[in-house]
Length: 275
Image (cartoon, rainbow, N blue to C red; front, side, top):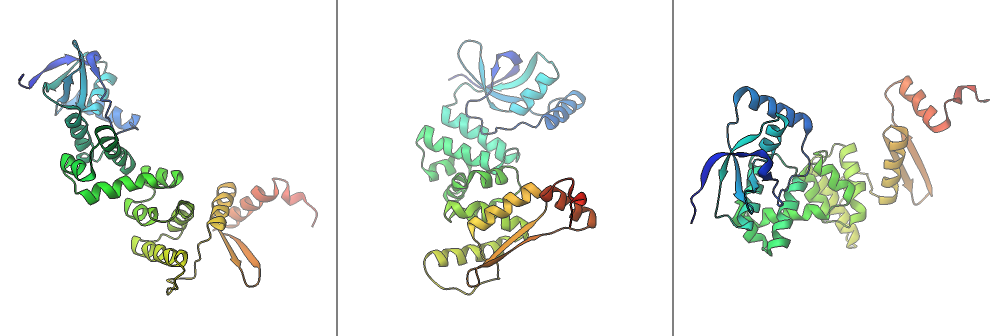
């Protein structure tokens, strides 16, 4: 068995890991890392494994590798590990990303999903390989069941993982409206969980004590989102089934905002219209 080796290797001989969970690499952050490496040197070598004749596959350190390429360097210090299985390579890369908090929750979940699908690992086995509990793995992988736009909110850290976990158990048609209401009303997780419990009870035909007067209608909530995107203003739509009447409410904070709202709805020549 060949012992691990520390030495400089050509940057051009290194290939990114095919198991890389991270999708987005922020260019500004990479430039800052490159500047730091240029000023202070690279504090930790990358980790690679041999990949055929005179080629190497990254295990850990893709950001450092990319930053060195930005500096137009030709070589990089690397730990070469000769006895690493595919599962170990995938797990070690994912562990580093998690520890450095350099991937989003959705990227992390996709990393676990890949371990599950590609290596046929159970959730407890994945947990053991990355130092997490089985329930942690299960909960994160469930984030991939979110409605795509809500999944993007979690990926972009607009919606927290805790909020997303509360939403994901509901039918998909409720995900986006509920996420929108959560953000609009600044609900904490406890408040959201109460609302989710009410929705579950309604779906099951059970009566519960309502936590507030906000009733979630997926169709109305989608209209709120659409109108809000078109007008650039917070929108609230309510409908009373008993009287068969409803109210569309636009919110603004100044006369200029109100005039801008009218212009977006009526048109730029609204002031010249006859009354």
